[in-house]
Image (cartoon, rainbow, N blue to C red; front, top):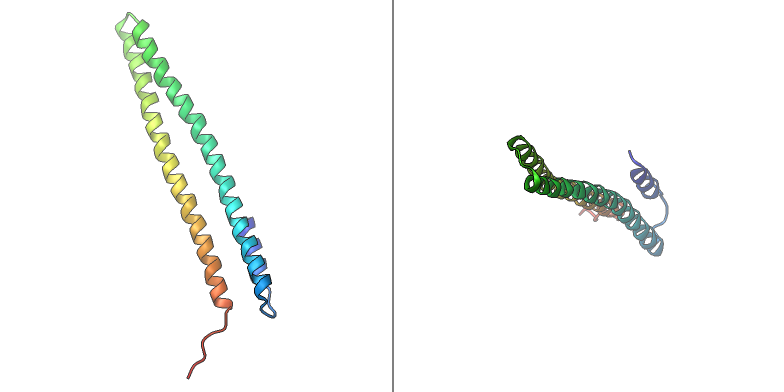
Length: 129
């Protein structure tokens, strides 16, 4: 269990009289904790993405410039391979970002659903006839 889940469990385990204003406040606090956690994770992902995307683009541009200035066949092939590696790395970084972004958004939605389910479970059950 991570820190967020421990805090959620502690807040949701409190028993006692149902106070609407206190419930609203705690719900807002929990949603804010969820939002902050996933925004922090997303900002780290963005930093990693941009660093590697710039490195890949630099490899691609450097390879293209080296192709234009190289006279030998081996050098041109080497520069072409470096250019292709840089180009493919940019594509892979975009795919990686998309996958991680989707994963974090789904986890965020699941946490919010867990919160809503816990709130519904705390409400009075319907009377049985």
